[in-house]
Length: 286
Image (cartoon, rainbow, N blue to C red):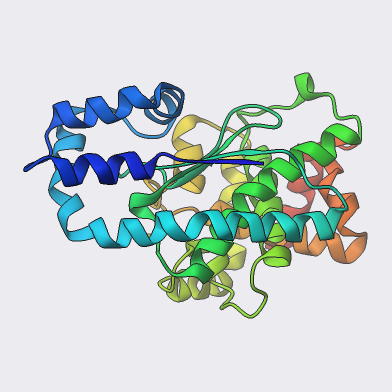
């Protein structure tokens, strides 16, 4: 396991200059081309407007950013140990900690066993919150690894379909519940902070309506629907974004009760996800 803490270079740069500029940010980005190629291509549009707004926000957050950067390495190591206990295997993963432009806060490289990235400016410094988001991202990697071991045919996975996103985010959330602090408020596993109670209450009170709308969308999936159900920029249907995470977790929890966690983790290796999940969704709206 290797942890690259690129945030330290940002803090050094921030301390050296009187007033951080766009040119200073480009200097920082140039030190870590692999990190920022991935980040700006898929997770944060690199525009002058966005980066200027980020520069304005850093002064009020700099101490919080340092706390996050300092706490993450220990938390990553601890959560990795818990996954080893859970599955009997400790994967050799690469983690990158850096200061971004207020785009995605955490993501996994688009590979089967990819690197894990944490853009710290949108992360809570609370260790409990960090545990959960670290476990969620590592959960994605273990999901891929265990599926690969089970013989999945990756070329046949429909990465662009909503049921795939629902399943994958459900697995990652479920695994975070098994490997992060089990005493945490349930909503933290979805919001990664203490502000998610209203969101989760809405989901539970409107479970049928949410499942019904997703089932309707699943038949005609598009990027706009992906954004609506799984991105921070969604939420036009019900006023709450990322509701697909809730549905996915419910599906996984229900399936585990019928079989076991190993069966649900490798479900897509032997069964048609769209058929299985669509059937489950129909059961939710009866």
